[in-house]
Length: 76
Length: 107
Image 1 (cartoon, rainbow over the protein chains, first blue to last red):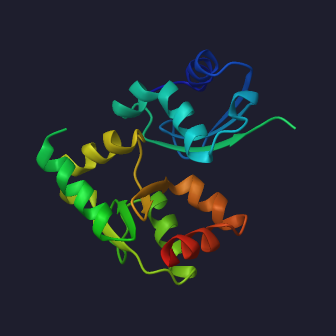
Image 2 (spheres, rainbow over the protein chains, first blue to last red):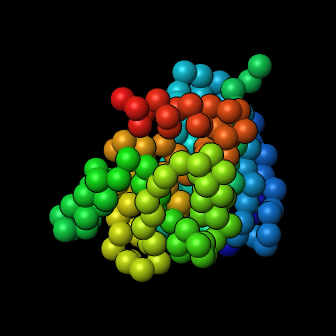
C-alpha cells in the first residue's frame, strides 16, 4: 500500500513545478490522481501520462497501486 | 520480454487496425477500466478486436513493457499506442476520438 503523501512526493520528485492532487476512489489501491505542471507543455497526452507513470513505476509493478485514474493538465 | 511474446504482441497490433488489450472480453469485461474502453468504442460504432490479458500472463506483462505503459487496458490504432482508459475517456468527452480513429482508418 502506498499512502497519498508518498504518491504526491514521488510525482513531485519526478516532475518539477507540479501540483499533485490524490483522492481514493475505492480503497487505498485505487487512486484518482491529478497532476498540473508546466513540464507537460508541448507533450502529447500519452507522453504526459507516461511521465507520471514513470514516477510510480515500482508501485504500479508491485501492485501497491493497483489502479490509477490519471488526469494531467498544464497551468493556465 | 521473450521474442515469442513480442512477436505475438506485434502481430496482434499489426493485423488489427483497432486493437484493445483488456481484462476480460467485450461481452464480459473483468475490470471497470477495460469496460470503459469497450463502452466508448461500442457507442461510437467502431469495429475493434480485443485480447484478454487474463488468459496469457506473458502478454499481460509484455504489453506493459512494449508501450512503457504500466496499466491495462491499452488501445492501439493502426499500430500506434493511442492510450489507456483515461485518455480514451478524455478524447471521447472532447469529441476528438471518433474523428481521430476515422481519419486513421481511412488513411
